Length: 577
Image (cartoon, rainbow, N blue to C red; front, top):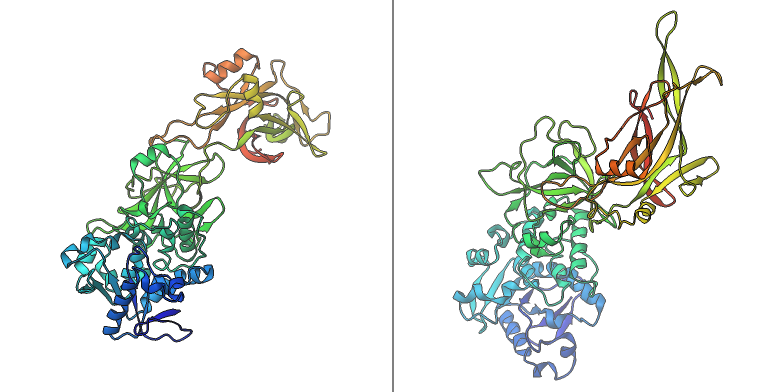
């Protein structure tokens, strides 16, 4: 550490044990004296900023300190390594100082204290909080008061709690409160919006000037999440006008300004149990465990409310009902991927009872913690390329046959063969043949624009396959094991497509589209148009030879390096595929 001798005004380097020293906090003005200027003979004394160095050294010497640290001249900013070390250590240096001298160049008397631009700068936040002893000086270097005697005025100006100003343990203060202190402060260099907060959050990270304020602030939050379970880091809000043009958000804020309304929260004494699952930072977002409550009734649920371990400080409200909540929207039909929506509103949560709080992806029941993936840059399109099905598949069923001893249950299988056009059937290895119905092919055939989650307004047909069914009994050898279909039996066509989700109650666009299917006697254009428009009824079951009914369910599958809705046949009665 490099210190300025208050008598000789020479810089001295100290390694290991440090002498007692004062430290200067100020706003940078014209012609500040840098380390390079101090090293250049005669240059420093000719600069306007040298008077500040002389006056601060004189003040420190009168207070009994032989050394003082001043950021303008004690750091060699031409060395990126030294600059990084200094910024990462600065909070510790301020905390270790015997006294911090705050020079307010725009204040003549105590009555003007609240008008000082010193309270609007980013770096001065840690310079107010970190030192134990802070003296405020006017532009004439007159003593105005210290942090103890001025605590009420400082609290009014900065919204920082009195116990923090008096030296409270910062690890007990919610992250959202610390962010709220910085929400109205500014820095000259964009990245310093994040770098000036490292000490307050007790994190260290490399400086990457040029990365931009948003990336730097994201890295700060990620470093904090890696070493803390304080969920109040997600307790931020946005203005309604921002939300109108941006429906999907990540869990991390892009600026401290989003925490300007987050100063009234605290970490509850009794936290909700997260089953020991830590929050994981990935390249696309955060994997986090939360308790969620669906906001919609019915089978299609896309909106969920999650309560953080973060409560509003109100004596009349209990910790549960006053929890900070975030609203999440599902972005996939088959993955637990979400985006945060409506960050302008904190929807109150009610008391859980019975089946009101099922976990995501779990049946209704008691409240459960679910592990969710919230994307940092939520996608605006569905990644599914279409539909696929194995060309030959079988479904187990039980055939009821008569006998002299009464009805007998004979196990059997329904053999299904799917047949598509030549372009739809592709060989997959030596033994598996798959039929693919690509969305892009359907778009080209129908002359439609892309099947996008935002522009799909009605049901669309992607394609169809002819489905041939046969049934056999497992306990008999061929050909006697074959069940002969009735004369009225006809094979069917399986028609598949996409349909939009119902509009949700918060008015946000859907994150995905749903697959649908029907069994159809015809694949003529008129019949397909009727199925798409809804004028023709949808048939969800088809009876195979032997009397068993089959239906379709969809699962995600990856083939040809693409994700498809894989078609699977299911016996309606047994549910066995």
